[in-house]
View 1 (cartoon, rainbow, N blue to C red):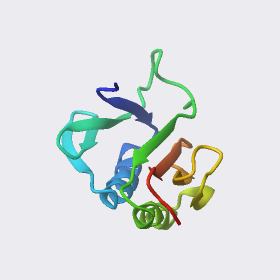
View 2 (cartoon, helix red, strand yellow; view 1 turned 180 degrees about the vertical axis):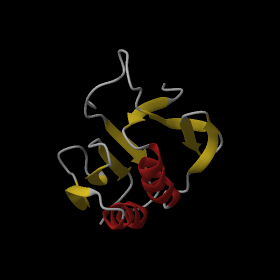
View 3 (tube, rainbow, N blue to C red; view 1 turned 90 degrees about the vertical axis):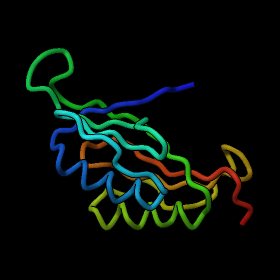
View 4 (cartoon, rainbow, N blue to C red; view 1 turned 45 degrees about the vertical axis):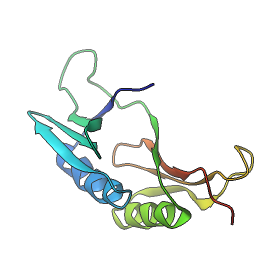
Length: 127
């Protein structure tokens, strides 16, 4: 349904270090660097981070975005969480089952360097 998604970052280098680390443990990687944007994915760039424009409609304070990245296991969700925390991310919710979503929803939530709510989720956990 979604072809790609992009967010603006106040400090592109800091955000790149964060996403290089947390997406790496989920099996994704930096695939493209173009001007002031970086594309991540597995087969092609589907998640983009870009420098916050200094002026215009996209400038100004960041508005929180929620992004959930697919994980293949509870261990991968935990690795994402541990890596994000090591990168200085604010903890929103530690890794756990979320039965209010569905019986096998295992996720962890942190804030990225710009305050976005970033999650890793696995939909097949049975612990």
